[in-house]
Image (cartoon, rainbow, N blue to C red; front, side):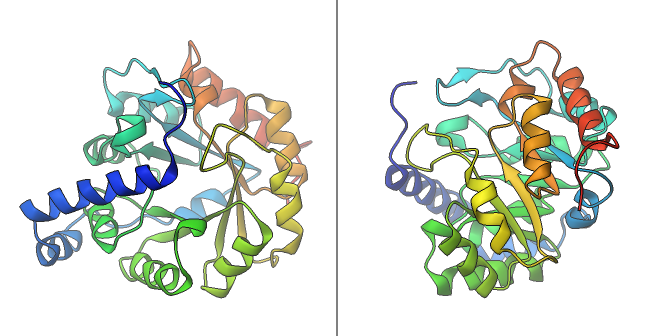
Length: 270
């Protein structure tokens, strides 16, 4: 993969895909189907179970190089990650950059008892109903891509379906917008949405301004146990880890090491 795709092109591609899917399955039909999906699982409770939780993300490509991850069975990987002790499994469903799919998420969800986080850029209500139908329990919203009215509307729709909304933010101002919109789970993303730059200090700059009852997840930048401990010391209830687990020779072993770090008595917790 060359330079990262501009975010406006990514969003345009996502909306094109949504329109194509809606031409085959109407919005009213996907709304109906979303009520027949598997019973929602409590994502927030899973993260708060103990220590600093690990959310393991399954993805078919590793940014920023776009290297393929050899996956024979998404369900098998999800099961191995569950056995490693992670608090939640996430699945990258974005097609354009990650070659993901809702079918991958469904396979992962049916293989585990843990809650499932849908990893995608969600900008349209249709996607929320799709996510619920395919088994999502937590759905992310990129605050910088949504005006306030749309943010509030999408959060309400997510919660009305029994799922948990995750507001992904990169600035204190975006965190304030998420709180004003009523979101109680904030994910601070270390990765820029427009390029491959990463800022692990972003989390510590934003979290002090969050109310104590807000769930805090650090998204990106966890390569080692030291990184997890640093996030935990800054107030993380959980970390989302994708690349360092999926690129490891033994993904389950890599996840197990991070889980053990997050559960160690020396790991800072709230």
